[in-house]
Length: 176
Image 1 (cartoon, rainbow, N blue to C red):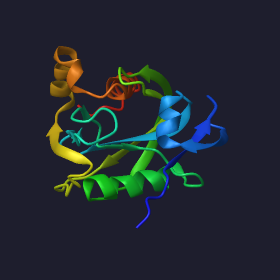
Image 2 (cartoon, one colour):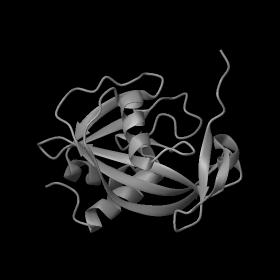
Image 3 (cartoon, one colour):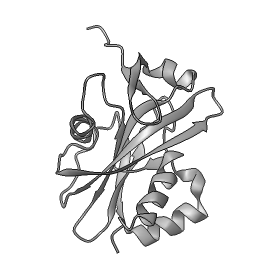
Image 4 (tube, rainbow, N blue to C red):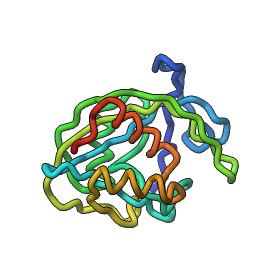
């Protein structure tokens, strides 16, 4: 079976598509591309976190939001969010777009995240069936406890996660 080349959608800061690039090459060249971050809360207001699998090409073993990925060329952001939520966490739920933000973060191993990140919010009260190839572990956490841990141990988290959390808080979108 041949491996399909993963491509990301290159965009400008207004999210206008400019073309596509192979995913790893886009991160090597620090090209701005479309991404998505899903934040799923339960009815108690806890956020579902995942710790990325150690085999991920960057940020392996770090904690982050419920699901994060890139839409494929021609794929709408909500469709990609549902697809990746099912693939990574083994469930799906209703999702609402919340906001977008742009960030640029170089890593020590030569890759750079330069993304226009679409943040979507959902609610789920079940037990995830996470794919171990994607997710090392998962946990539900109250936003106040998470904020304290982010302040105390930021190195445990992906670079985009505290940025998105701060924007969720600023917009009054964190439960509790």
